[in-house]
Image 1 (spheres, one colour):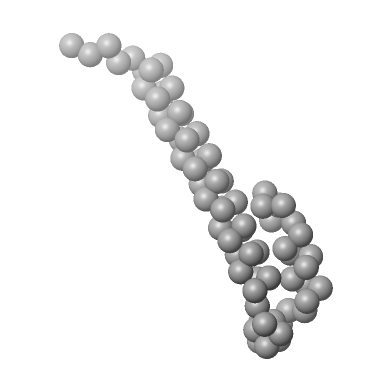
Image 2 (image 1 turned 180 degrees about the horizontal axis):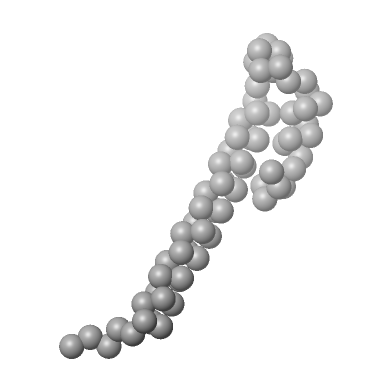
Amino acid sequence: MSDCTHETMTNDHAKAGLLGTIGGTLRVWRERQIARRELTQFTQRDLHDAGLSSTDVMYEASKPFWQA
């Protein structure tokens, strides 16, 4: 016999959803950090091809990882 109630099932589901949301947020933050670091390694030709300026790169790279 199980002791599962609607309340415990709902709470477990909410916890799993919350962990998934937190995990997704951490993943996005890490991807931003990596992308911004890579952006600083672009050559002038890479920047020109991407339609970016050095100022654009400095601005983007200076943002904290949590800021889009």
